[in-house]
Length: 247
Image (cartoon, rainbow, N blue to C red; front, side):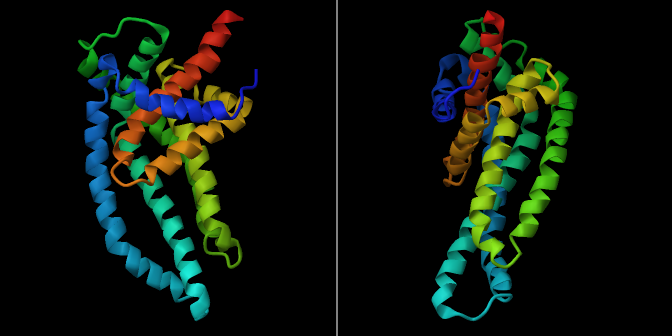
C-alpha cells in the first residue's frame, strides 16, 4: 500500500523523539561520540581546503565579476553537501555496529518488546563483521551514482544545477543508508531494501531530504545520524513489518 510523502518527514522527525527515550539513550552515546570525532576531522579539512578548491575551480570559468557571487554560491552549496555526505559515509562505516544495535533496540521499543542492555557489547562484537560487510555493500551501490554526479558537477551549464543534483543524490543515499539498518537487523537481504524503496519512493525520498538538510547544520548534525537510524526503524517497522503481519 502506498503511503503519503509527508509521512517520510514525520518519521525523520520522530527519530529525535525516540533517541530521547530513557530506554534508548544508552545506545545513542557511542554513535554520537563517533559522529563528534569524525565531524571535527571533516570540518577541519573542509574549512582548510574550501578556499583553495574554490579558487582552483574558479580558474576554469570566465572572469565575469557580475557572475562571481552566483558561481561562488553554487560552489559553496555543492561543497557543503559533499562535506555532509563525506561525514555521513565515514561515520556510518565506523559506527556501523553501534547503529545496527540502535536499530535493533529501537524496533523493540516501537513494538513494545523489552529492551535489554546486558548483551550490548557482546552484540556489537558479534555484529562487526556483518555490519561492515553491509556498509561495503551499500558503498558499492553508491559509488557509480556518486561518480556520475561528480562528473556532472564539472560539465559547463549542467554544473549550474550541481547543488540540486547533490541534494537529490544525498536524499536518496540517506534513504538507502538508514532504512537499511532495521532491514539488516531483521537479517533480510539488500534486495528487501530495494523493494521498500521501489514501493515507497516519495516518502523515502522525503525522509532522506530532511536528513540531508539537517546534516548540513553545524554541530546539530552530530545527533542527526542516531536520530535518522531511529526514525528509519520506526518507518520500516510501522509501514512494512507490522502491516505485513496483519495481512
